[in-house]
Length: 116
Length: 111
Image 1 (cartoon, rainbow over the protein chains, first blue to last red):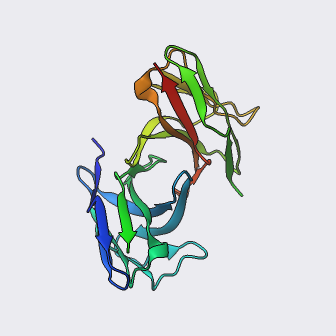
Image 2: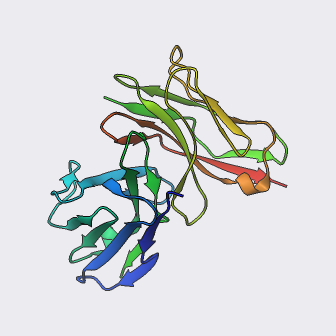
């Protein structure tokens, strides 16, 4: 149980385009979802926290107008990278926290974004 | 604030060797502690966890004990396999559901 999927797993786009990444909890309801960014050989950097039905909370230094997050339901959150540029190329990972007392997160497989 | 410190890698071992990856933390309150594993090109998978002092998390031959007195959560395995090659992340979770990650330790196991 506790499976989180991401789509797409890999995307290449031209500079200036927008890319939407979906994160779904497949077998549980996620009250909170998290979006991380990971650079090569580095740890995960939390970008934002989203709770279903409310606005996302962004970490310091993360542009909310650049990285649009929507958490429309208890099983789906989306991250849209707007007007992507080469420096946005990275591995984006989402995670989901099940409702209840479990103090942990289940992670998606990640989406590799390459902006040309 | 919360922080997690892991030993830097890469750690290179021969198959069947004993593994220890050190992890120490600083935190307020009573956090939960986790080890996650990331295989090449994949997301993170929860390996094991411990929610209170003296708890031992275990999975797939890996173990870690929550030591409050030394603020540590070292990962151990008695006999590593080539398939254990991955990056291991120690993490701390608080009541606010946030995870604080260590920098990750790359393990390479040679046949």
